[in-house]
Image (tube, rainbow, N blue to C red; front, side, top):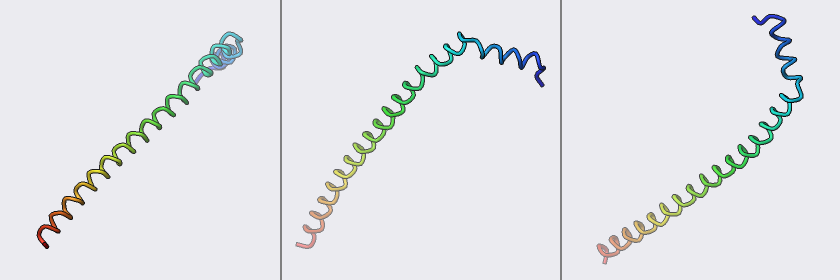
Length: 76
């Protein structure tokens, strides 16, 4: 357990204007960076998923056409 002096030391430390300004500065610089980077990550992830789905759909269409030609060739 912390002693009363140790607890008061932290309180005095965070009451300092210099420490408050540093904490606010760090907070105000890291929050926008986190927001922008998470937005960019999510957009990139969505774009990659869309591209993969598009490619897989085109491959499925090609396979479908090949199977239809094969079936039509055997039937005719």
